[in-house]
Length: 348
Ligand code: FA5
Image 1 (spheres, rainbow, N blue to C red):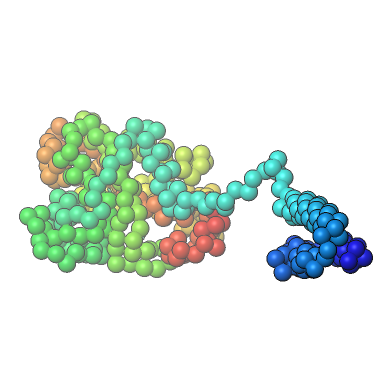
Image 2 (tube, rainbow, N blue to C red):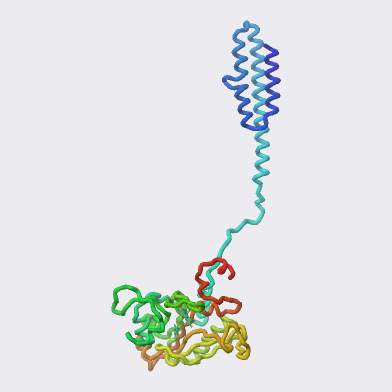
């Protein structure tokens, strides 16, 4: 029996030494120390021994049990230690390394342009107004000196909203921001110095037109306002937004709501306004910026102001158009701004 015990101890220690993973260790433990394990078998065998002998053998078996259990405990600790080392090696992080920031995007170039234009005018005392982009026919046309059947209305290629008419006519998707003129006069008395930037809509789509675009409308009304101040504001904007060398000019035009009316041109940034070179961007050194003029007396009257006492100027330009005209933009089709193509937007 003693030699059997010795052999079991030898085998147990030998097998234990060879085990390299926790699963096999558990299997071996059950085989040796489990309820139906070899050590228990030995204990059962002891039942057939004489009392004296059982006492001696019992002590030896107990010693065997303790030493095997200790050997298992030792093995488990060393395995745990090795596992911990391996895990530390695998999951190692350098807590002093700079963090990884999630990729961040930026505002759309048109949104950036809107913010920049607004700030440019705020710097010279214009306050930003929010006027409805879906408005009554009255503010969009009627109050702007374009009565019901006037042919000038045709120029605006308007989207009408399919809803019942109110006391101020039909609802329209504003084709320009000039609806802000009489609206602001109804809200405040002169001096007025406002800029209204908003979405506008027209039934148009080609390389220089989109059906939803943005305009910015400037309006100044006070006593003794003249074209000289209009020209000053236009020059200020052109030099601030496009660069200090840019020139502007007023070209006679016709709008129903301003008198006199102008188209504003800005000298071309590619050929520097040199009419003698064949420029890919402009016509004879100038680019068209947008419309402007002195507020028509009928519009002042519609806003409750006496044209004998007050005068003013207004201008309305396209945000997308001024953005495209900016040096280095190289956008040859306005529609690309609204295609939601990240490859395009990421360039800016
Ligand atoms: C007007 O809309 C007038 N309300 C401007 C005005 C305001 C004149 C105040 C006098 C006093 P016009 O239709 O020219 O004018 O448009 C002005 C600018 O809007 C154009 O120069 C252009 O820059 C932009 N624009 C017009 N239609 C489109 C379009 N479909 N897509 C993109 N931009 C456009």
